[in-house]
Image 1 (spheres, helix red, strand yellow):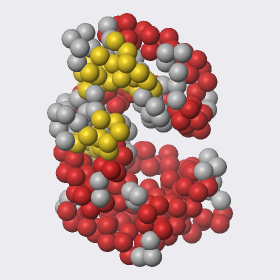
Image 2 (cartoon, rainbow, N blue to C red; image 1 turned 180 degrees about the vertical axis):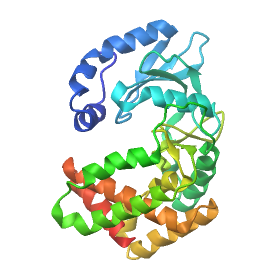
Image 3 (spheres, one colour; image 1 turned 30 degrees about the vertical axis):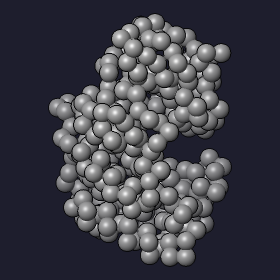
Length: 297
């Protein structure tokens, strides 16, 4: 089958979007064929293992130039991703080659998907990541469609309250931090929303380019918080992991002129939220790593 979805995508969609995954996967071959025909593309291959929320097909445009066709269910927010990429217009982020706003397909510049910042030594990777994420923090467009950090985290907080009672102290600390941060926030910038080393790929137009945004509007510290826990498995395995995690918070905050306390609070909230969600999905190893990391903070 030409557009066979990778198993990684099938598993992830079933976990995150169980109500729509089967139907969308069944429609996927037709969706891909229609997009290829509409843009008159030549298919090279499906990217494997690919992403967790979309099918990525490596293609050639009519003029022979390389591109990537990304197809995602509406539940994964391709319309919002398209709007964010159009607003960045290649500044720090992957270039949107066609702005068709009617469907869940995106035609993007081709990057070197096999090379992300995770291929670099940690210190170098964090330095490059800081330079990229700084570019993305710009004013959102007027009448933008993006939700705010306060709204997104309000939904997440509601789900966290049903976590295992044994996690109550950590969950309560995370929720208290979130309440304080949202009540005192004074920045409304366009954020990547899911920024980490694995979301920055090597390119030809620029050395490093951000991909896969889950765009949201809010303060910079929220966006930086996910980056703090990158390579969490290495931190947890090291003898000085706890102190290294706290140093990373301070170093990233200082390098990007972000308040240390706010970055600490958002790092705590986002780590606990991800850990609780992983536990609920049965990804117990991931949950243990994330919650141990959160406990260090």
